[in-house]
Image 1 (cartoon, helix red, strand yellow):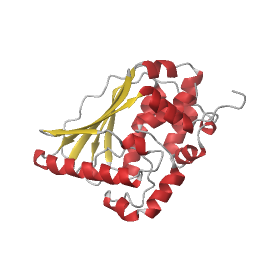
Image 2 (image 1 turned 180 degrees about the vertical axis):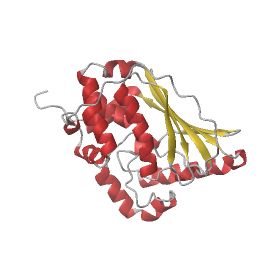
Image 3 (image 1 turned 60 degrees about the horizontal axis):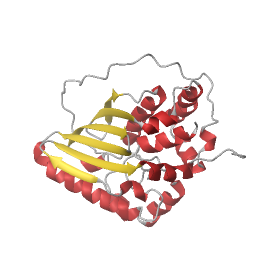
Image 4 (image 1 turned 60 degrees about the vertical axis):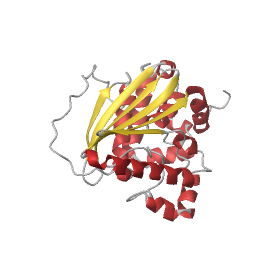
Length: 271
């Protein structure tokens, strides 16, 4: 069951593929490339929270979108954190989680709770499930008004997805899409796993320029990460730009992705 936590963290953020040692080496050897990726990327740790995610301009007074109808109240987080699932992950992923207290709290207080209560059932999630969140983007790439649009049915996973959106601001990974004012991220799991990122423009006239920057950013990222374990996440991304929207879609073969992510999960001895 603890495999679910590792898999879902990776999937929800298009793979918190915390190959930090390799990524640090890539950053040091190709600083000029990473500087070109956008403001702040050169100095931020290059963890693939979501290289697809946009970074918009000045906020407008927008009527708040209706939030998803809340389900039953989630049980309270554990009073005392339980790290037993965390220590089963690859040390590089553990380091990343511990550097982000919000993620660590969800992992050690909420995911553990949902596993123990039987709410987090990895088989059901990986057989068929979906999740959708949205957020607005402020002037300096800040993440505003995070909303859960469609629940995965697991409180800790929903909370983790919203926390992941906040990390985009912290790691300054929204610079490539200046001009996008709102982002909707959805994950659909059926025969395949499909991640869809949809950005809504503030000004439709900037759509072509935003698409060009996104394509350029992905090209540079693929080059910089060509030899890392994270490279597969950047392959075969479709980009469609029309009217006031830019849409990025990445579909993964379910078994291939799970097999890749198993590298970050440490089996218990004797199992």
